Length: 382
Image (cartoon, rainbow, N blue to C red):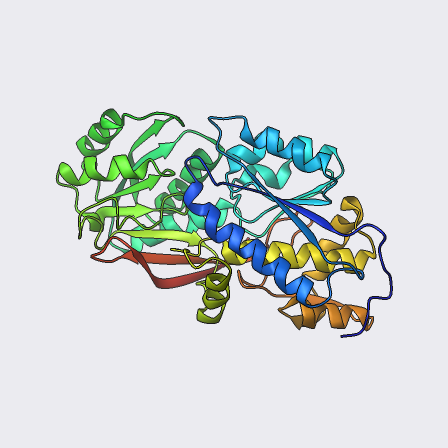
């Protein structure tokens, strides 16, 4: 590769704010592996602006704790230019003003709340996960195509849950269906019998579970009262491996949606080389793409300053020569060419608000071992 035309006295430093504890801790390993794989490939190719990229990992916890604020303070104190995270929309809301107010890029691989589209973020907030306007549209329509005429919903009462609930409901009703029950619970709740009983009493054809790991408690309550797994539809917050949580067959035929295209086999192998213990790959591609886009924008800006990186993120994602790895893209950039990065998560083309304008939503089906397998993909534009 041609050497960088500009070298930096200050290496690009990226922080990660991803969950190793709390109700989304199951998403941490694939996201952290995606970040580490991206960093490894960037540094194997010579780094950014002549220096290896540094990465600092910190736990985001969840909204029941103040871990995210403490971790963000620590990362900002160490001079990061960008922070990848948080995974939870609710957690990101607690730190977005702190991060963007410091002139640092916040780049989430998994935030889906529509609220971030209009957030006053100084153009420093970006994400590779599409807004739940798209996931909600796909899930609402899909339940209707599966034959459901009525739906009940059990929903986490936070930015993520209620935002997704609204979009699922709109799409399902537009497809001719009726939402007959909507029961909310709060983060930290441990009893869900009341919500389950009210939803079952409405006798819905299908039940949408918009939760995080609370599904471990909710699913047995539903199936114990006669709800078939084929009636259950899950979302990215709870579509995970339940092979150690439920007896075989508990979830057989249940389905779930996760934003992003299915992880390709060669990408999975690279991730497993980084973390051999990985069980799923949710948002690994989005995390990997976040690293590459930040690194490429830094090269394009000829700067490691957060505000200058942010100004180049949209440009490296659209209209130019297609490329999908850091080495191939950075070679084009150093030759003075415009690039259009397409990543592991999909085409990644940003709006002026920092949102992906088009994306895949993967639909997965649970097998007899309570693990989910790819079923089909839906492509949509926002």
